[in-house]
Length: 312
Ligand SMILES: C[S@@+](CC[C@H](N)C(=O)[O-])C[C@H]1O[C@@H](n2cnc3c(N)ncnc32)[C@H](O)[C@@H]1O
Image (cartoon, rainbow, N blue to C red):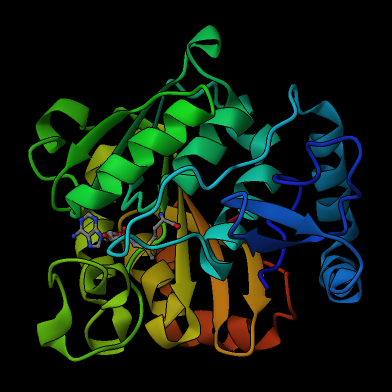
């Protein structure tokens, strides 16, 4: 049983209430909405969200232009299947749809596309060429790129797909051009020698504190993002998200938690970063790890902080 990726698989269907959850239907090979049994959990999560965020999600759902269900059209034993982290990331993207569209994105990118669930969702949420938006996705695992291709095609959307390490070979071409960057990195703390191992291990193996791949992605993200660029990244408490925000603060980014979700196994944060042109020395000082850590300890589920006065 997996929690619903809010608004996506089921909420796009007028016949299925938003408060459902998903179960993998092995006969149909798709993520099928399961009604009732985890509605209580789902509502609990939503109630803990701020009212304004909830209203935004509801408004987004009403306005979504088409009905869709992300189907599991292809899989491979070496490719990461969508899970709580993928669902939380898509929920965050859906909740932030207005904000993304306000920036009139032209190029959206995913690093580590796995099954293609996230990049396909993003393309459906924001629209494609008709809206002037292009998509690009990378993965170090060639099987993941094949599965992503099939997932995109099955949903009538497209993206340029590249097998590469993070964005190796693309940085020159894409420098300063990416308006929306989404990443669900391998974040599980593991021995360092498991990082980058071929196949499914590379989906989760994050090295010390789960930060090895994340710490390589951050400077790349900085180089790829446009001036109005937004980065959405999944992190785990063990990754020390406050330090990640501090690292990005030093590069001039503000941040906020779009979604925080605890499962039995882990506490996930979807953090949004954007360039903050009002950064001054004092702000940078206030973003020191101690300051952010203390803020973290004050934040209830699904709340957020802002690095500066800037509204995002
Ligand atoms: C946690 S999975 C996420 C998959 C998918 N985005 C999702 O949310 O369901 C992480 C993905 O990153 C890919 N990956 C790991 N290290 C990478 C690297 N250095 N460069 C590109 N992709 C990488 C893995 O192969 C895997 O598909």
